[in-house]
Image (cartoon, rainbow, N blue to C red; front, side, top):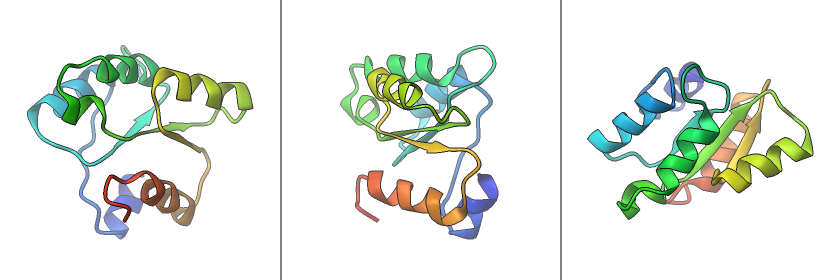
Length: 109
């Protein structure tokens, strides 16, 4: 993922879990979150729900895209219900990832 973002000149900040994602969002503004669903400690769904419940609207309304290997329709519905905007299923191509990012960008890039 990091290599794809670098190839496309997209700046990124990498964190290891949901707790670190929340801390990063509170430190600086981001345009979008690529959220791995399965992370140690605090997973992506829990982190997304916490983000959506924050009082700061700039953070709580940020587009969040799930990254997962779970391709079942029920899984996608769970991610959307948790507050994620979209989902990228592993494995994926660079073009697929960039298309989902563009479709969910606040700026329509």
